Length: 443
Image: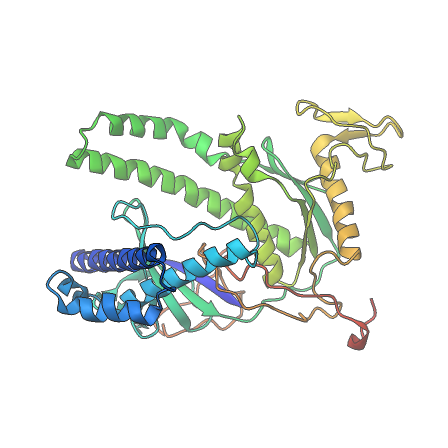
């Protein structure tokens, strides 16, 4: 299982210049590779091999006057840029042929120096974890890092990223074993909403923090100041960074809220069921700002991979299931109801229902039925995974090892700390299946 751990880095002035050069060289090489492949495709010859592109656009280009500055950065950065392009093309081809599930993936596009996110990726040949807590990056130097948690294992790769507000991050990918939690007897269904962020089938409600709504007043003032600045001036650049920092604060607070809520739900329940919402469709309605402010998709993804990591069951109920129309007490379908109807009385058994709580209970019942029918991936009856797919770690936030686990990975000077467990990016879709008769367990 692969996890990704994010840490804030604080490069000095010379290191920032070296990183800017690395970002630029990786971007130029990417654009050169992409241009060559597009021209070859238009001319009709076969697909250009990566080895040929590497020889022309890296090895030979360094010897020319126009591309001599490519030698100022590590060769690993340039080679990884080519590998990333190959991955982008592979994802595009798999999406066209139907091998890749989910939303369709478009072809690779050119990169710009004005992109809000600049990054380079390095393998173990180009970075080293030092004993004093710094990270050595080839042709950059020893980067000062804020270690918020220990790495559970030696990293296999690192991505150095600069975001829109000028912050630098190191994202390590590590291979770890699943962290199975003790079994509990409780299960829950979840109904997501806007008035309350989530309503659980046991009646608990998680209030919606509405981070963007709370920051709108300050964002409005900062954006007005930005609009008054002359384009191309230094004052406009400063104003733009202020706006970007405010948006980053909103995103960080929302992500932290999602991690804490999802971790608590996974810890407290052996199985979690929720409705498969059409978030992309809701994002085009008059409720778009509130929907994006809630961040349902990110929250559902966190629940899904944390359930996989900790040996819990997670299943989605189809979006066509009438969770708000069915009485959770007697099963009578009472018909559709407008959104302003928050409470209703069943016409069959006369039970009074809170709309969201009733929907969460129906999601729980339907989720149990789906799992019983074998239409959802669950751990086997012994709690051991039967099959697990190996896929790359996601790009999101990092995870924390459980208390008591060994988590030393080349940073002997770093002291362990206790803080809220908020594991994040692990393999999406790592499958486990129910055990069969040879297992010997009683289910």
